[in-house]
Length: 365
Image 1 (cartoon, rainbow, N blue to C red):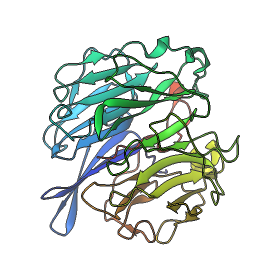
Image 2: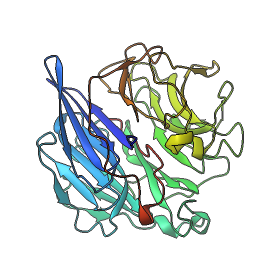
Image 3: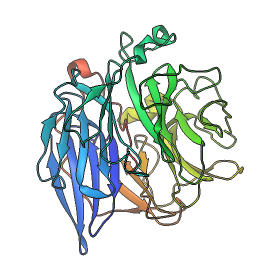
Image 4: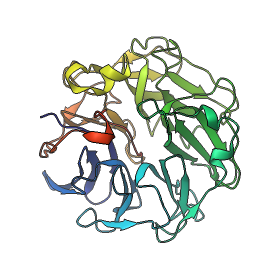
């Protein structure tokens, strides 16, 4: 049986630790000397999104498809269910405030299906619902194709230079933002992404937004989006992207002009293991996109991977695939598989969950 992957969160300290969601379980891998020690948790809860605190690698949050939000304070040795006020069991996005000032410390964002946003100022002890999201005029157009009767929060990104500024992608239908930590919301604008699977920002590139969109396979030239002014206007530099259903995205911590994305030709070839075919592309400055596959498994029958970076390691990228976790020390030019193993999942997505669709989230911390 294939391995099914959803998201990865990477952080460093005295020991290197990786949190990854692997279909029906959560994986925590800690590097001790020359080996990785692996813990698994949340079996059968179908973890979907994970975010770890870069200043405290012992602290991490995991959203699940079946059983809400969970937290560890001991580096993955134990997990506790939290967030009683989060009324929806399907947690689709988890994000931590950037730690640029003391106001951001302890801030945790959670998005659910149906689309609702919650915020905690104290590392998940208490929560507040950020109302008004579904009051936006575009809401009747929001719909997630596998479950068209509903939609969900796909990604939450806070500005590293202004933690009051929050950007949200709704799958599918809108890219919205708030200038005041969710007190008010600004609706989508013409030309903005409609199906952004991953959003990123960079502390050295104020107001620049990067987005990996899923509609490029329908509208060629509209897979990758970039904004230089906080989402007021957008450009779509897609030259060289031969596959424009985009999924993962990561920006080099040391160079905001270097971007990696994961891509496929369509949702089916991205997420269905037996027919999947996925690639990683890189773009530097205004150059065209080029494939970066050296050291990675054969693109055929590889589900579309997710990408991550660590702020303390310029030029280093991580990717989670259904063939393992890989690291690049040369900005994606070459990749090496990490010696991290896990048991195959007990099942794919049965019943009401629908078919397994591979990696669905990435938390960059």
